[in-house]
Image (tube, rainbow, N blue to C red; front, top):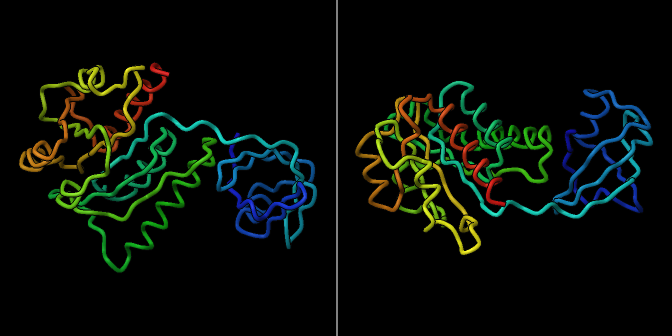
Length: 253
């Protein structure tokens, strides 16, 4: 069941009062009526089960029926560094990557990137992508929303990458190691068999990363890996890697 994000300040005496976009969505889009049950989560990731008690043009009021502590976060934080894709492909990747559990998404400009951000529209674009991530989080029942960072050049990313224990570059020209080989390397795990802290995955644009770009990445500690004999589209590669990582995370819990 979907969840909806609220601010805890809207709660008072076990009652929630809404008069914002969520109120509009519940009233005018979903056409909710008194008595219907909704699932909510606040900025501290506390979950609530609430029953709508009043729905008017001015506000929506709900009574809290149940309150649950924040869920335990995954042991590994995953950042997707995605070369900006043209058209609606980037929107689709953000939506699906959110469903697959990424903690952050970093848009990257590479040599072959076609859809380059314009300075005057960048803030609007980030806001729009953040909204897509929020809506996807609500749809899939997450308690948090991935952070969409401002776009950076590949050189800037390689010079100042996030502080992670594993940096991966899936690349269609790579023969070995395979992604499987890297994920089974014991050096990346702690004594209990869990991944250490966090990782970042760099996915190239429609035309792929160039050999010099991959070589630069290798020299700064990134590991280029093969995803097998088939060449995947950029948007397919991103989701394939995330699905594999989620499988590995689940099997090691």
